[in-house]
Amino acid sequence: MSEFLTDMGEKKELLKKMIRMLHDGADVGEMKLLFKREFGNVMPHQISMLEEEMIREGMPAEEVHRLCQLHIDLFQESIEQAKLDVPEGHPLFILMSEHRSLLSFAQELVEKATAPSGNISRMGELIGFFKESSVHYLREENVLFPMLEKYGVTQPPKIMWMEHDAIREIEKNLYASFEEFEKKQDEKSSRRIQELGIQLAEKLADHFFKENNILFPTSHKFFSEDDWKLVKGEFDGIGYMSYSPKTEKAVSATGTVKKDHNTVEFETGNITLEQLACMLDTMPVDFSFIDKDDVVRYFNNAPDRIFVRSKAVIGRSVQNCHPEKSIHVVNRLLDEMKAGTRNKAEFWIELGGKLVYISYYAVRNKSGEYIGCLEVTQDITNIKKIEGQKRLLD
Image 1: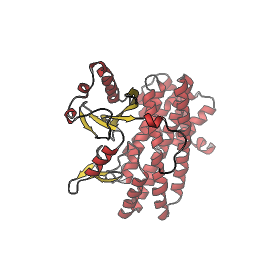
Image 2: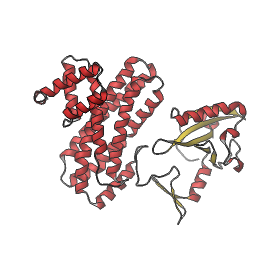
Image 3: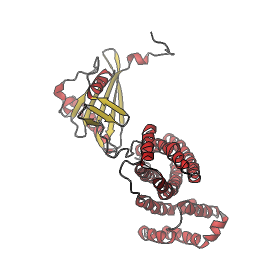
Image 4: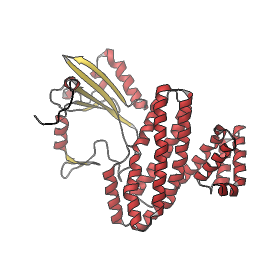
């Protein structure tokens, strides 16, 4: 590291100068252009090394971090511009798309943590996305890396795996810090989330740049079409994040129907329409689905339904299905789901000697857009009475 910093002496001084200029109110757009011109050939981890050295020399971390967004933005552009000639749905297309999403989420988390009031729900969603991202690294480690090793490419996968572990460590600290923030909601814990968010964004920018520009092109060069078919099948088996583009054509919330044999194809399997209908009607819960325009579109015929439903409600406004005194609650719930500030609401009531649990879930597509609300009602009277264990069939 010392050798690197000696070679980069002038760059370090320029970096200090830029920090002072930002502190004095320099135009961010102009500074970004300057940064791109002077540091465009420097990797993100090298910038991070310079920043760490400057902090050790006594410069306040808050001042050094003023430049973080500039170099994250710069490498975000590199990541977005890194394109291989692969179709939508190709394993490399999926991985690179996930790169863009994860880096964007890291940047957004830092922004939300800077002014956490009113943003706690969204911060929780972003934390959830990072927890989901574990499958991204598992797919690379268990499928892509072994395939590369078969072609004699051994060291790059080892280095990338080490970086995965470093990312996991940052994320682990981030999750713990967010739990602490949820309890205290103080400035110290929100600042810690900012710091860890910046660390994560920097690490992801550096790591994704290497994969997009080195590892993935190498894979594309060596792998055959049969290799990619195998990779895709293995990827499907491990699973994806909720915001991943998993197939060449987006699968709708209800799957796609093959008219020739009346089968619905999901990412996790195939099922006939008859099997699907019977399965939903066998579930010991009541389902109702309201679309994005608040229109009732579906309900299941569960055994011993708790609330009576008739086919007449299909196509009806959900507001018209509730008494006047509760419409304001319905509207608030749906408005918050549409705005993205709520994903779930739950209630429980006593009804006819039963304890009834009612929950509402925002249904979103792969892009995170609100497409409707799922109402689930269940009699939990007997569930509440369960104690001990039951391991044998009566």
